Image 1 (cartoon, rainbow, N blue to C red):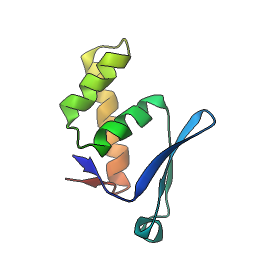
Image 2: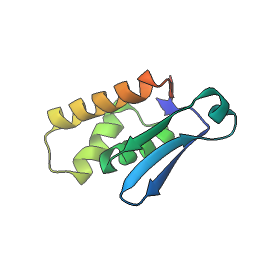
Image 3: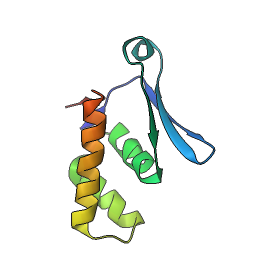
Length: 88
């Protein structure tokens, strides 16, 4: 999985924000706010990480079980997919 080009992640105060730039800004009128976990997943997806790599990244940072991490990743993927931001 990989995110479409033309979106950037920025930290604004204590919040992470994803905005469209360039040509994508004309097609996508979207601004997504992310928490720290979402920002971590966004960065991993930007480099083409698969679901297992995303789950592993969460497990490295947070003290949670694999089932919870997997459910969190599924929710994140669903959110960015619903915005049509993933290239398969």
